[in-house]
Image (cartoon, rainbow, N blue to C red; front, side):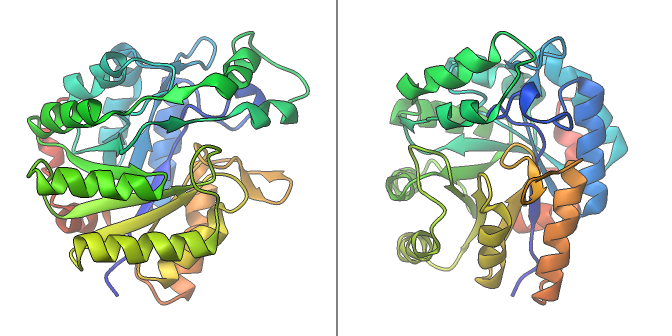
Length: 307
């Protein structure tokens, strides 16, 4: 098997400040958490921005500017900027920072879907900020828009800036949408496909579903693609372990799961990276360095980004 790429999603837009005191929110916290994850073995750092005043998900390039330079100076981890941002943002808002900073890598959601976060609201007893509870509860009527036109725009805009993509597939249909863009010649190889489980509106973290996704991707894309697995919530580590045993790559991080064990909040992203690294190494996999991940994914140099 090839070396395994560990990705770490540092803060995301799903969880809110009231859910964990360890969720990084300010620029300094995001930078320190990302650098710690890289030092623990994460080759790719999947990033979102937050408003440092109240922890609200942010698309403001100035909020991104507060931590991107720190991360670049502090570690060799590949910066993977979200183009998903938050489902309540417009596409122009979601692209504002990636357009400006031209990272090595971007995430790209491969289909429109329901994005139901409202069950999370029932787990919080006391809210720190007034936006949090309405944000979560309102997701019972939230559509995360990623139309073919949107996807084509992201491919064009960020491809012109030299970025490669983490294709986020929350459902079987998203693989077929990716195949459509491959057939159009809009996607460069190698493909890096992230199978996403655990978001209500997408696939549940079901091992049978992972097997089916892998078989379908094999049929659609042949042998020359790379796949990774993230599972939001309690199945994070078990699904990542299954992916590693199948020859795939893995993603962990506080964007996807706030816990390190049942009922125990993770105190850092590095804690989750350390756990999955220990597991995959016991499975006989060697962890890829950032330089090795760059070579495997055909990424441009970190010197070519705009931060």
